[in-house]
Length: 494
Image (tube, rainbow, N blue to C red; front, side):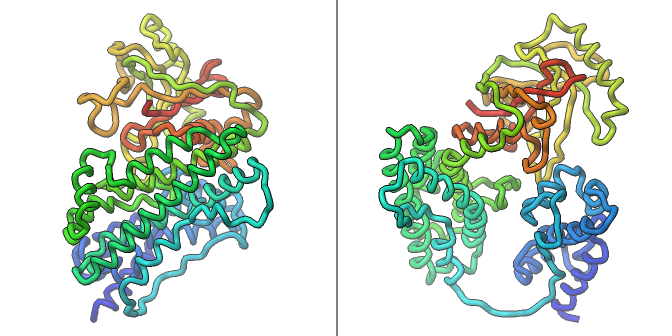
C-alpha cells in the first residue's frame, strides 16, 4: 500500500464521519502517519488543508440537506458540528454566497469528494499571476464623456466593493507563495523581487497615487468621504517599507534595502504572516507585513463604499445618533446566557437586574441593562461567542456571589497586554429609532441590523476595531431588558 492509497483511505474515513467529531489524529491514523506529517502531505497533494476540506464538504452537504423538506437550519447546523447557528450561517454564506434561509438548487456550490490525480506544474506562473488577480481601480476605464463628480465617485464606490470581495483571497495566496520554500531558491530570487517589489507593491503605490489625485479633484463637490485620505496616508506609509508594527519594522526595512534576505525562512514568515481568509477574520499565530497591507487595502475600500452601504441597510428604522466614547475604568457584572434557553432564563435575568439595582451607588455612565458578547480574545473561527446579561458598573464594584465580572480599562497598559479581558473601555455608541423588529432583523446582515450598521459606520470612518484580542460588542436596553434593545456598543481603539 503506497501514499496514494493511504490518502484515499483518509478521505474515505472523513466522508464516513462528516457528521461526527473529526480529529486530525484519527484521520491521520488511516494513513499510519503522525498528525503533522499527514497534514503536510494532504495539503501538498490536495492543494487545501484538511480543515478546509472538511469544512467545504460539510457546507456542501448542508446545502443539500436544507433543500430537503422538513430540515430546519438549527438542525442542519448542529448535524454538521457548528456550535451556534450564527457561526453556521456566516460560514454557509461565505461558502455559497447566500444565507441558509435563501438556499435554492440554483444558487448552491457543490464541493465533491476529492480523488487523487498526480500532476506536476512548474514554477513562476502562479506568482506572476498575483499582479493581475488583484482588483485594480481602473480609473480610466470609462467611455462616458464629462461624467458628473457623483458618477465618478460612484464608480470608485463600486470598484471598492468588488475589490473587497476579490483582494483578500489574493493576499492569502501571496502569503502562501511567500511561505513556499521551493519558490525561494537562489535562482528564483531576482524574478521574485520583480513580482513582489516592482509588481505588487509598486502597483499599489501607483493606484493609491491615482486614487488620491482623483479624490482631491472630486472633494470640492462634497461627494468624498474624507476618511479615505487618512486611509491612503496609512497605506502609503506601510508600502514605503516603514512598518507600523515595531516587531516587523527592522525586518521590513532590511528587505526593502536588501531583497536577498528573503531567502531566510524567518524573514519571509515575518513578511508573509498568516492567511486570514476571505473575510479577514481567521486567527493567525503571526501577524505579518502582508496582513497589514491587506488590512490597509480594506480600509481604503471601506472608506469608499461603507457610507452608501450603511445608508441602504437602514430599512424601517434610522441611526438616530452615533458617537465614540472613551470611559474610565469600569466593571461589567452579570451572568452568562446559554444558547437556546432564554425563555426559561427570564426569571434568572430578572433576579440579576434586581440584584444590580441594589448596587445603584456603583452605577457607571452607561446605566442601562446590557447584553455583552465577546470571544475571550479569540477569533470567531476558533472562539465561540459568549453572551452575558448585566450592567457596566464603576471599577472595583463588589461582585455578588454567583455572578461573573469583566474589567474594562481605558488604555493598552501592562494590565491589558494579553488577549481577552480586561477589555478596553473605548467604543462606538449607536442609538437607533424606528421599527424594533427591523432593527433586530438578521436577513441580509452578518449578525443583525444594529450590529452591522454600527460596525460598518466605524469601518467607513477608518476607526480601528480591536479584533480579535480586545473585541467585544453589547446590545443596550435603554428601556430595560424586558423591551427590545435600541442601542449598540462596539469596541474600538480611539
